[in-house]
Length: 129
Image 1 (tube, rainbow, N blue to C red):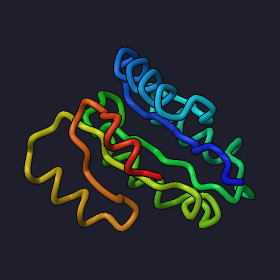
Image 2 (cartoon, helix red, strand yellow):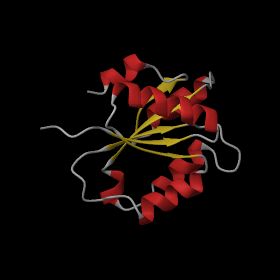
Image 3 (cartoon, helix red, strand yellow):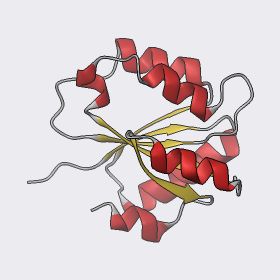
Image 4 (spheres, one colour):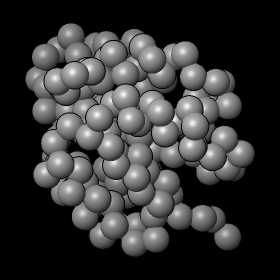
C-alpha cells in the first residue's frame, strides 16, 4: 500500500500557500503538508525536525522571488544540508517569474526537477503519481 504524498511549500505569500494547500488537499486529501513563508524557518525545519528516515520523498514547491532570502539563496543553503535530508526532498520551482535566466538556472540545478509556472495546477499534481 502506497502512502500519501508529502509536500512542503515555501512561498512568502500566505495567499499562494493557502491556494496551494487547497489544491493539494483536493487532489490528495490525506497528503502530509507543511508550509513556510520564511526560507530560514524552512531551513531550520529541515535541519532539526525533518524525518530523515522516511521512505517517502517530500515534494518541495519553492517560490524564487521572496524578500529576505530568495529561492536561489535558499537553494545555496540547501546545498549545505546533510545528504540524508537532500535525498528525501524533490524540488520544483513554482514561480510567476518569466525571466528565462530563472528557467535556465532551475534546469542547471541538480536538485531542481523542473520549473513550474504559477498557479499550481491539478494536472501537474496528478502527474506526480
